[in-house]
Image (cartoon, one colour):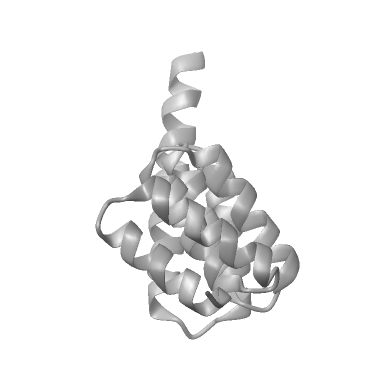
Length: 130
């Protein structure tokens, strides 16, 4: 099977909830074609669905090293950081995505939300220290 076919099978497996099978297919796709960015993004999302956020973060960071000019891995990495309650890094990744794609309203909206969440979290932590 081609890497594109394996990617599609991985996507179908993920949508059907067969997450282990999805990761196996996506791993094969990456092995055949290490530059297949969509396989990395799909795999990261699959790990997030499995609540394996650390693995998702690792996959997204690998994707960013491959294609620094694509906002998608930054956005997905930001959501993984948000899932792990690391709002500071989530904000940094949304800011990077916004620099790459400044006219994307979705990125701007998510950035605004995480900035607010970060601010609230910092205020709560400051009030606990008093």
